[in-house]
Image (cartoon, rainbow, N blue to C red):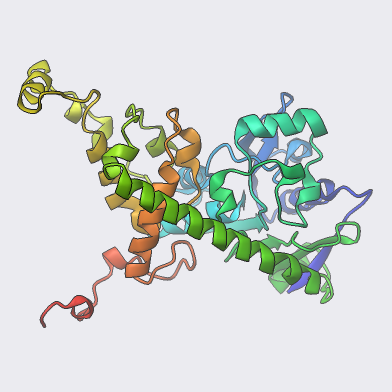
Length: 369
């Protein structure tokens, strides 16, 4: 059902904070995972049990320090220790769904709260916006466009799924009249507990009028950027050319929500070769790139998580060498996902293709019965 959360004094953030406080104080959840705004202006995800701390909650801030699916995985494991409410952007929610399928997270006793997402900024850009506008950056929410002409993260510019799927509470900002209130989609039973009345007029034609051109623009940007990356790879020596400035810092692996292995081969001493190894390789080839095994690292990651990649772009944001890793993985992921007719994060009940056996699945690609 669709209801309406009242907004007072043209402060949508205050209305969202009131909803979160109500969730916590009512006992519907025992703790809330939500972005908090620090005194410095930094946005950091936090687990909140004291309602007073929700005065600093700011899930509307267009900043994304991590893909929080990884943090929720750490909070729940295979079963949640308490009734949790988690506030996630659409890409974070999709990543969490994939982690549930991979048995790295649980939705048991978890209330999923999400919102329409116009996009986020790289941290330096967000700080610039803060200095210029304070923390009142919510005006861009209803139009689904970059705030005041500033450039969103590349992953957000090409995001084709800015609306969450499968959330228990979905705050609908696109096309909303925030003076009237914030439209919210939620289960009737949950609405009753939160005392949110049905309002069939809350999400009207204005929402679709904003959403349709936004999705069209994002699709066009995505097609253009992925095509350009494919051409770049083809004309610059393939993947080795793309990753030639990689320093093997593993930042991309650290921030990736789908790279969940507790004991990763690349975090061990397996690739700390003896000095003779490097010298012998240099003698064979004439030159030995240092550090080595870079392409192996990236290809292994593609093989492990390409099918579940949600294109959040955190890998690109974390790269100190400014390698467009997210574009490469989005391009590979899109092809792998199309081959399996699979959309990561769409449905928690849809099985992962690589762990699901079907008797005739190889016949479709020419395998003999």
